[in-house]
Length: 221
Image 1 (cartoon, rainbow, N blue to C red):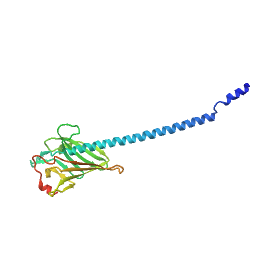
Image 2: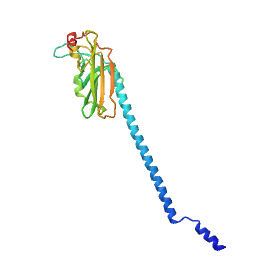
Image 3: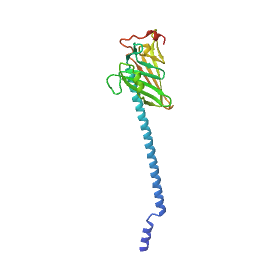
Image 4: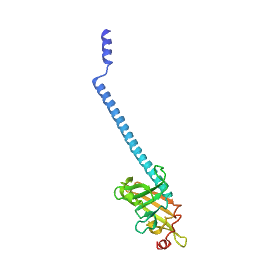
């Protein structure tokens, strides 16, 4: 009787093989769980980075849109001709203008400069606008990279004599003495998986209150 009890107690324990199998299965489950956690965390970080980048791009576009809507026919005196001129320089891939909108919401006018560098992105430069030509201060400032991996192109709206509205690729206010009716901006991503970003800004203050537009130059557009 005593022998049977001792034998049953001896058979009730785990064998070495069973312990090794249990440890192996536990390690396998922990490994799978850890891999799943790392994958989820990595996806979360990528999605979070993409969301942050999208928010930054949206805020940048919104700020530029507000600035272009607030474009102002800022005038200055040409030191060579002593004539009053209007500041707004627009090309197909470059635009500089004066706006009543400031990123810091500071009082006064702000000069904006926007252009892109191939292979890098779109750059933004800003300086205060005083009574002189803002071009000199822009040349002294270091621009900031606004949109990484985007190139920018511009179009400018003007009205022909027949009241037909036409988009053109250049607008030089120092010659035309007025601003365009609207500005179209398109940001083209270098990454084909991304979509283009667009702005269409109507300029309400397109004429200076005391400087008459150069109708002859406008007709030649």
